[in-house]
Image (tube, rainbow, N blue to C red; front, side, top):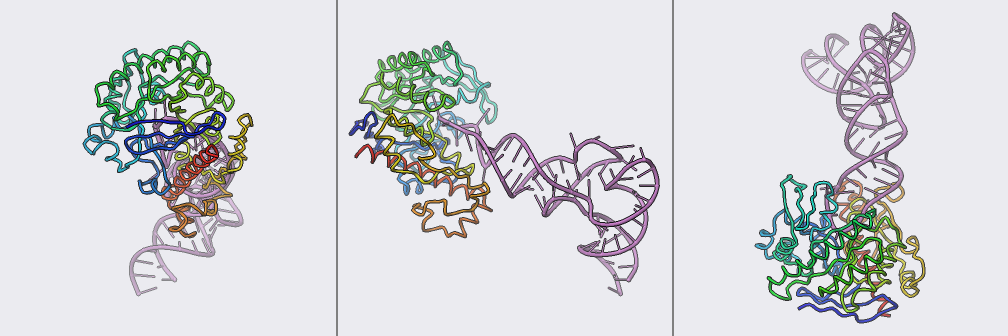
Length: 375
RNA sequence: CCGGGGAUGGCAGAUCGGCUUAUGCAGCGGACUGUAAAUCCGCGAAGGUAGGUUCAACUCCUACUCCCCGGA
């Protein structure tokens, strides 16, 4: 049911095919974040289909709290629940452990935390994270891991690597209880900014023979060069014939950077969150994408790659021409006056337009990347 | 015309004889990277007009202007 193949390479950048029970995904690909089984901003499944979105990512932690995995399972799993027949990934909740910060207690068996909704004391273990994800029924599932913040000390990062390894092993074992080949489990490589810890983490994860490998941790603040270094340091110790997933990235420049380091898979809240907050990305420079991929050492200048506008800010407010005239949804059904009205008066509905725009932009970016690698 | 009420940033709307006149919306700027975010953080901006009382008036008094309600 699951398979992965690299079909073409341009330097380290890879064109790939990932088959899942719910369809084939061509990589490098981007997973839009649908935390609670819906993309925020009133995006519907038909919008995703129109924009040829390949895959979405939902979240174990949030769905466990509401509505609960049993309800999702009754609705036919995530696919039935969200009326989406394409591939889905679920994140394990490992990141929430990290991002919910002070309400969380970590021990060797799992994590104890309080619900951000009603304060209920809850516990997640490697096994329960897999149970929940099994009930949710996503195609790609992630093990519970320990994510370290950017400023973490070497000792903290080393401990996280170790804990993540032990838990990954337990997650893999827990998966044995479920029917084979219905879900693909990845191993998460931590290691912060320390190349030797990345290497160690990658090699140990590799022993466990996962379907794919992801690069975890919080590195945004480290900047582009550090990202490139970390990604390269990790990837060189990962198998060439398995998917590589950079978790939580990123901006278009991050993506191009990581693709040419050999990453196949991405996810990030950025395009959707920023759109909801008024910022759209536009004017993708396809020639520049090609240049950056063809010359892997070329520094990437975000300003050459695309343009950012904040549609709620003065110079761009209600300027509907910022939206691509080729936009599959905006093009025909919305008049200028209507778009103007949406942006000015109907806050959330106007933001829906921006969300659609950014989804379209990211799909365009990924398509362009694939086209360049394809040659 | 008579009686009553009222005039505070672009709008709405509090407070107060002296202290940066709240707050919300709008405006302007910034942030956002495995979503506790249709969010968060900043900034600019006000006392109808003319007098009076007072050490001090947006606040009290008088007149004027305008608005609202009721009655002819």
